[in-house]
Amino acid sequence: MCSISASKNKDLLLKLVELNRYRGEESHSVTKFKYENDFELISQTKAYGPLDVDQLEGEWDYCIVHQQAPTSKEVNNTDLATGRFIHPAQKEKDYLWHNGIIKEGKFEGDWDTEWLFNQITSEGLSEVDGTFACMLNFDNDIFVFRNEISPLFKDGSSFSSTKFEGGTPVQPNSMFKLDFGKGILQEMWKFDTKENPYYFGD
Image 1: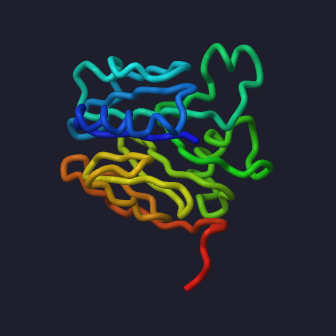
Image 2: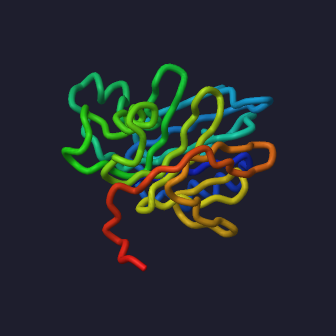
């Protein structure tokens, strides 16, 4: 189990980080952005162990924190030393934060999050068999999406894997682009949840 906490408000972000600690603290990352007309990544730290909230200090306009109980195992000492499986997954200058797990045998490679990143730009999300709630930094924009099985809550431009005061669920099965200035989500396209074991019909 993992968690995503994100906000432009440092005080709220601190509350969200604390609220989500129960979901896993084996590793964490802190990614800070400046925002003018788009999101400029200014710093990113990844480390094993619980998050020290002092890492949230400094000047930034938006920050995404991922706290992790890993679902992939380090396969060699290099992966362990570099923290390869600490979120976000990276493709060139783009990043994906993932809460959830893709079913065993339903993805290729060592890490389901890397595989999921490829699915977004290739075959799409409708054939992804598992759970996912994600934030994506792509081409200097922030995108948000989840399927029906994974939780993600929002209030303006703030997001949390755990419900928080004022937070409402992100609509599932849609890819949204974050309008940072207005704090709203713009729907880009839809997808299906591959299999929802909790769906009982109408």
